Amino acid sequence: MLDKTKIGAETEEREITVEAGMLRLFCQAIGEANPVYVDENAARDAGYRAIPTPPTYASVLANLAPPKTDLVLGVLGADLGRMLHGEQGFTQHKPIFVGDRIRLRQRIADIYDKKGGALEFVVLETSATNQDDELCATMHTVAVLRN
Amino acid sequence: MTIAATYREAAVGAELPQLVTPPIDPLTLALFAGGSGDHNPIHQDRRFAQANGFDEVFAHGMLSMAYLGRLLSNWAPPERIREFSTRFVSITPLRSVVTCSGTVADIGIEDGARLARIKLTTTLSDGTITLSGEAQVHLG
Image (cartoon, rainbow over the protein chains, first blue to last red):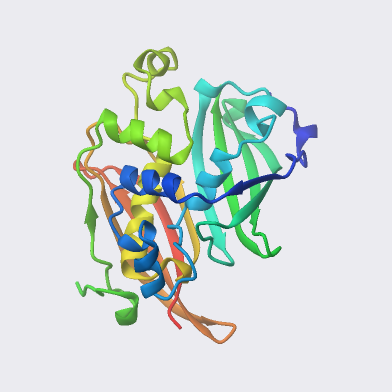
């Protein structure tokens, strides 16, 4: 069973600069062809201050700037092969643009189990804040562990 | 069924234009691993998948959520998407064709702004629902 005393454990703050090349690869991977995500002129013509990022990209930034110790695999010691993604949510407060310096923090918000411990759930909350100290996104992740 | 081509035509019960992906092949998953920073071998390495009780590698849940993100951001500019959440209901096997669908469930007023609540699903060719979720889109 996962150690419920780890509820509240937090990562250190990490910072990542949003890069055009990485965003281009993400768009290629998901079949996103809208030029505003790859072409600065198209983005400015659409009224943006820089290239905007698509929905869900805040979670990519969190993957690209991992903490020293992963909360689920490291702090809780869970087995990667037993882990599934149960739920994911984003609340967007401010858009994230290419060139932004985004700071990320993540914490374990809850741990619970179902079916007599056959399934365990870890709820993670992640925040993404930009270089002007504006909260851009909060993310809600539920990881499921099959025991 | 009414189709609302963009958020400007949002009406309760209207559907967003569907999005149907090409089949998800190993290259799609390799690109998504690199592009998303999710290198979990369960999506890349058949032996690892089999050691953990699966017949074959399967697609990242976040790939299907990104497809739903495309459905939404084709419909409304990304900065209008205030909330976006999904449950990963079942696994998306390799070679799947994913159909992304959205319906305007209701339109409400919050802090003086009109917000549309969109019900979202991704489905496979056999009708299996893989993701079920919703989004709140700011209509202005």
